[in-house]
Length: 340
Image 1 (cartoon, rainbow, N blue to C red):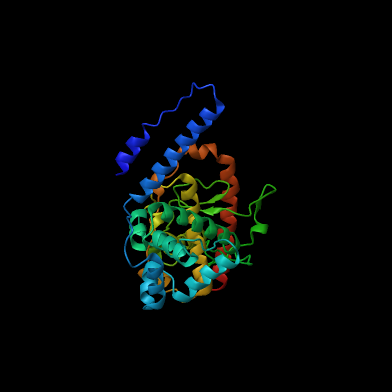
Image 2: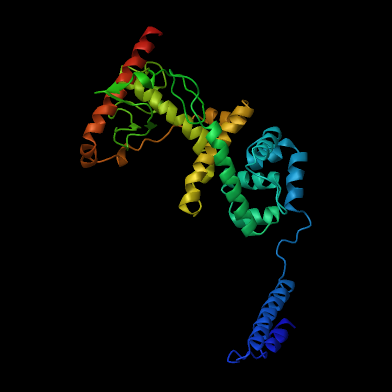
């Protein structure tokens, strides 16, 4: 029927050579009418895809009203924390309900994706929304969570500590960053990196050719011997916390989908924000405890480290960070021998 109707509409003749402006207006009006009628009948004949009687919103309500393990298995968050997160995103006006998806549904889809690396089409089928809707909602929640992250991803108000980005702290001590300087240059912040990186400005790497892995320090008689070993042990401990709490908790960080680069950059920030929020709301983090009990040891990347040419390029920076590292290691060792 639609095909026959369109063919009949094609028979409408448009005389664009006419000198009469009224004739031209009538012709253009006829074309506009044909276009709108075609679009209308195309929509009427489009076969719906998501036709399940159990809507995505009903699925979320069922999770919230069901056994607590069901929601936790999907979003890696208990019911109370999930509701608080949705409420805060509303109150801050970072997210609002729209005509097809409410905040709870959107957040649930987002958390399901980052916690299990679920593909768009699977989320679309599970929540009975189009893939376009799922993608749009993911982007909106991603931006909202990153905005929330600017408020909760921050170091604690402490000087003498070493901590991961999520606020978790290991048993270690370091001098205040304000005390660390080299040739008049102060180093306040830096990334903790493995030995695959040069120990250059902004990057704090472990000592090479010195015991590093946690399993090297386990057992009788294997306690750190000297400042460099103690530094490496605590450096490895801090990396282990990050691996356990962030990377292993969010599989999407290991198997990143083929998203645009801008979206990929935001996802680690959002993961840290979600983790921090959960730790702030619920200290009894069973998932974090599970990773801690497994005692996962990180793999060092020394074999893929920077070559000699790369290190020479950053010789001056190396001197700065070597001084910083020695300063931290010496202070740690002094505190260690005084308390053991």
